[in-house]
Image (cartoon, rainbow, N blue to C red; front, side, top):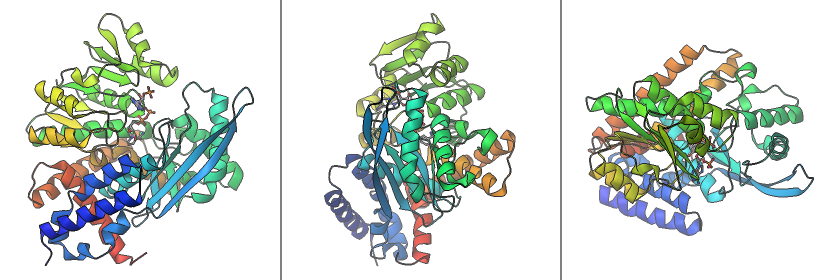
Length: 452
Ligand code: NDP
């Protein structure tokens, strides 16, 4: 019989080995550590999961692709970027996960995101494996023509690795509807196939799903609402602190407003805005989505209720709930302490791994409901899977139908995490609940499919 202590010793040794074999990838180490440290109870309770090699296989990507992406800027200068696609696990379906274009992208970042994606996708209950990709290309300040040439060069290599039954990328930081359009166009041109299901996040006029742009932000608000409901409260009248001002943050703000909450902040890498009257989502969309401007411009145009705090930490603003929606490790221990001091009740991660491990521990010790990204932000990939389903059937669902499905999926994920945590003796611990529930589904499929 394997005890929890035996399992823990084995998982600790595995973590050390993974760190040794994957040097200089701190974000990947962090993501693996955060999952492995919660798995001992499930390995002890279910001996089949203790099979040698199962967890080891889960932590090793099935395939890692790195390629050169040369492109010319508007002055004719040649730039060379690096492209990545990490196909992490396909036990449950084709690899699925976004592409990130940001100067900080490297193999370790893509592996952390791919690893997270495996568990997240399993939690949705849909038939999708996990993968992630991107490039160290910085789209900021680039013209549409430059972004198009970059996307075309990126797809000229990537196309041979993806397909509707193989690997289905979507957007992430720096990749939105414009980039998906250019990528899809080049894929179609190279392959001479109208293969709508090869990318998600497409325009609704040519194969995209209604509510896909909204889905991650809407979903994380629905997850926060479910956590509050569990405590006998609702979102109505709650003040919300939101970080970021990209795709996830904008639709987080929109849904908070629709449900009667009061989002008072948003941010970008230059600082944050606090708006005493609540964020005006139409102005936010105009500045960020239409004009691709900076968040400081929101404050300049909003009038007296809003001010821009350059370089500030958005977490110093008091709120009942917090939704970190920008990037990894953006909310540290001091930020968590400030939020707890100001009476925060719930935190739902819209971004991937935005909260550092110390900060997560602090929230949990303080009794704050904490929804990890792999559960709270799964709405985006869930609607991407619904987009694939619509593409396969050559049909388009109404926005209402997609939104109802999204709400059902987010509630199911919440219930799964909550019940799993209770079953393993840590009630209210959504981190453990999400990790174990995601693990069980992937591990069962891997065991059934043999050692591959
Ligand atoms: P966008 O590119 O649309 O927006 C990213 C936002 O985060 C911008 O406001 C950006 O500010 C800010 N940001 C990015 N990097 C940093 C940084 N290093 N420091 C401070 N701010 C930063 O991306 P998304 O909204 O799509 O993604 C946000 C997060 O949500 C990411 O963690 C992503 O992985 C996660 N996510 C996204 C999903 C989706 O469907 N899009 C699905 C699930 C998770 P600036 O412009 O100054 O860089």
